[in-house]
Image (cartoon, rainbow, N blue to C red; front, side, top):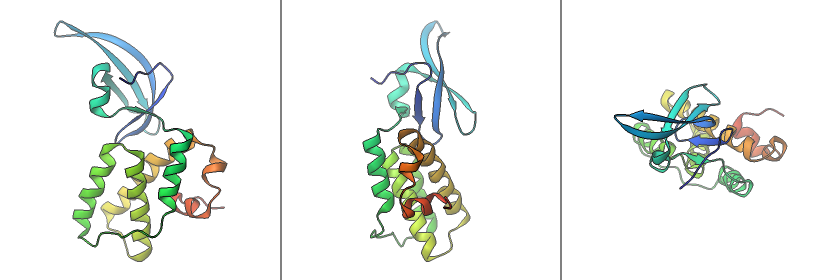
Length: 164
């Protein structure tokens, strides 16, 4: 079972990186439960997660430097076949990947949408999803590696919209 301490960074699927601000025990319906209080860094939203539900909600620690390298290689791939299904079917598929909280699946979504954007105009929903995937990944990758290391490649700079 994954455990966190106050001050640890953790990733909450669909919301991004948060910081554990407190570990509290509350009594609910006569049962004592321990909760992690987490504040999402980008939005300031506060979430309380029962310690027993950490795995079922997908709360996880920040990725390692090696895993960050794997994410960057996923983003670098350009020889991928993009599904030619309707945008709403593709949207649902990508949304499922984002909801898993897997940094690798989010990287695939970001890469695929970025490559698709080069070929044709993205729908409003796809543009919003591209921004969401970009935001979710950027925060975690910058905490896992140094910014210089992350943006040393032009392709990665382009995907994140960083101008030289």
